[in-house]
Length: 201
Image 1 (cartoon, helix red, strand yellow):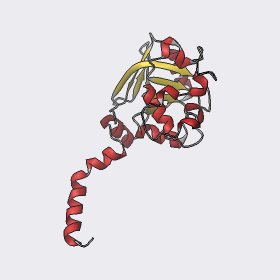
Image 2 (tube, one colour):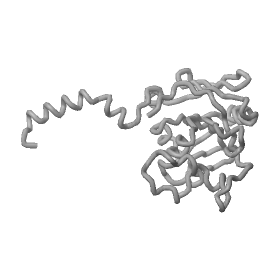
Image 3 (cartoon, one colour):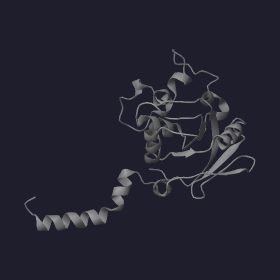
Image 4 (cartoon, helix red, strand yellow):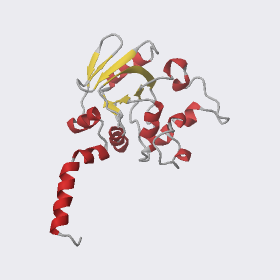
């Protein structure tokens, strides 16, 4: 998993509330078990019309937001069914951070496991981020996980909270497999000892 330390990028404003996982990645794209390739279908029903043409006024189709790496969203982001394809699609598009006032629990947890930093802010501070994102591509937001700060384009700093263990995993690029591999020496030692004690097993 890619490490997350400091991210400086364009933020896309998406002030909709209750954006659920079916809006993020519709059910017809859930057949794959690959984490790559889903970015093109992110927000599919909002990004494209029925003929597959881009809808020009959707935020991620606008020229200034096509390279967005940060998403500033309305309340209760990621609600709905517990599909891990949702963070897969977000990450594959290139978004590494989502800022909202609240997230659905399962989506929130899945973000950390897929290299995405979900940041929960009070409404007033989220709104500051939203207004900054509305300035377009010239307004870059910097997110420092180490310092737990968001720096807006005018220099305003906003602090945020994050669980220390999840912070450790993101900074070091550790998903569940990576965490297990950190204990590889201890696991090998245990297995060798178990084999000597129970050779029949």
